[in-house]
Length: 252
Length: 216
Image (cartoon, rainbow over all chains, first blue to last red; front, side, top):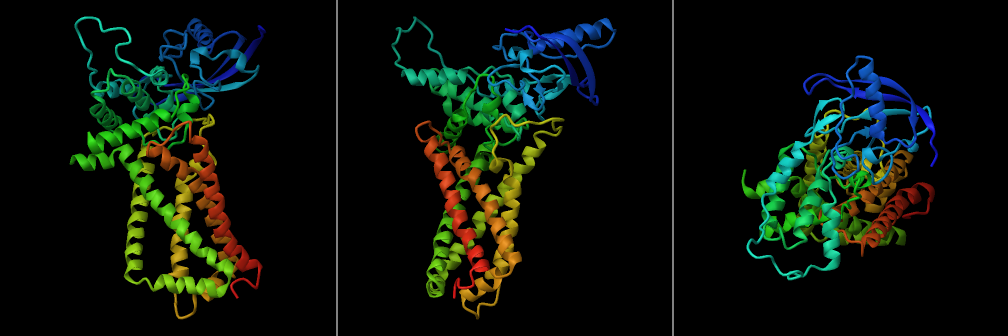
């Protein structure tokens, strides 16, 4: 692995708080190791800003292993940057060249309020989850191992859907600001398994109603969501959500 | 708001009604294209097809009213979703780059839709709300022999092909039809539908303009 050092021009969205007007600010960073992650590069910038007595750029992050769903920004027009199937923290600087200009913006949607700089409030996704309601689980003695048969491919599909980390990149990338891939994944992971199956009808109707209520857009089948999803979740889950919605609306 | 209207006006409800109205419009187009194929067999075949069609009487009226309702449903819901989707991102990105999901067709859906609507008005003006004392082949020839109309019709049909190139597949996805087993057939089906439709619809203005013997 090469250990090159690169210099970049960063055009970053700065906004002091949710109700103030934001604007782009340009920074230059040098000596960035190509082994660094994108967030480490922002750390370097923030150290410089702090030492210079300026406000560091606020951004969300937590595990930095690509599994928590906390980080995310739009880099040069793509949510989580140009690398497929990765979160921003797992995007490494080796994918950029010396002298590149990077435009870094927060995820934008009416439902996602910008709190500060690159930090957006993604609690609307939590509200959709809450609208989904509960899952019945049997209490009492431990159930027999393999007592409830689940076909292997069904389990795999449920697992693929459950890989969703709720980062909101699907909403950010959707030309229509729709949260259908998120809702599709969440509905799918429960409807494919015995746990969650009994409440399927109410869940599909309520989650879709909440999604609409919160101001997300209508799915236009543009497929941008699955292209940027760091967990590569397929829009097959959106088709399943559509089926679940029809079943619930017509027969539920 | 009642439960049913809530479901119909939900995001999935609107898309599914757009999908169903889209299939109906697609079927109409297919029948229209088949009917237009009679022009390739000469003036008499075309005129006799048209007079047979018009002899259906009130059945024609029923289909016309049905078509207007379907078109209006498709257009009204299309406008609603377009407006809501604009509102869903009030602050657009400084830089936007597709990650590879969108196609030429999906990107231009509202615009190709507007072109088709505009074409529809011109088309009805040319052939429906016109003097029907002449035979239909003469009316067609009279309009499409003018280069302006021939080119406008061809461009509108290319817009239609672009609209269907996303619309047909999108309709299946909106109705929940997506499975690795038949996804490739669905995509190939969409492509062949576009090619056939455009071939028929563009050939007629092109032949009228370029081949003096057409429909004689």
